[in-house]
Amino acid sequence: MAEADLAAVLADVGAVNVFFAVAPPPPGPGLRPVADLADPGLLAAEVERTRAALAAASGTAPDRVEDRVAASLFFQGLASRLLSPVLGAAVAHGRTPDPAGLRWRPDRDGPLSFTAGGARALTLPAAGPGGRAAAVADLVGERVVDGVLAPVAAALRARTGVAGGLLWGDAASALAGAAAAFAAARPGHAPVARAAARHLLARPPLRGLGAFAPDPPHAFVRTTCCLYYRLPAGGMCGDCALRPRP
Image 1 (cartoon, rainbow, N blue to C red):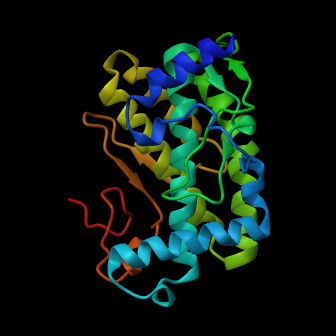
Image 2: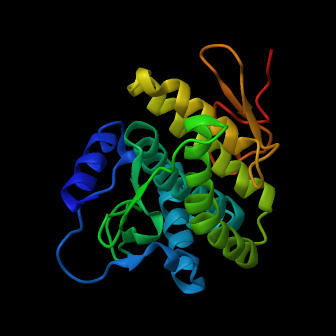
């Protein structure tokens, strides 16, 4: 795929919401490959950045935000920023940027975001017996879940001791949110987006960590908690396992 074609795909899916946005590469040095997010020093800085943002939003001191809360919410945000554009582009266009080629800037203002500098295009393989949704799930599972998120999850566990199931529950929630947002924005692609998410939720490491209701509006409920409720003035997310259900 030509660079211009990839830019058009990213511009299209990036219009859904901020989590789907992958910007053109900005000028100047300082961009790092996505794999560097598993580097202990850079990862520690990102968790501390998340802790500071959560503390500011909660009106409390950073030392009142637990390590595992900051780690959990950093990972959920990372998963959303990676799963959303790759899933959306693969579903709608059959073409997507290789997540391994995405870049980010440690010395930035604002939340983590990615640019496409260095990203080559991936083309969705021909659909097999499982159809297009299974092909999307294969690509997203291999390139995002296994290729990028798994090393970061392992590094977070080593640094903070946060449970692996909790982190992968965060990724399951991010995946469900991406599928729901894309389905709402692009109704013609809703069946494939939801089916691809269901395929991924049926596989390790996301298996057993949440499920969609079979009927509209296809609400998602996870089986773990991101720990947001442990922040001062925090609460429970809409898909939280701790929320009372009818």
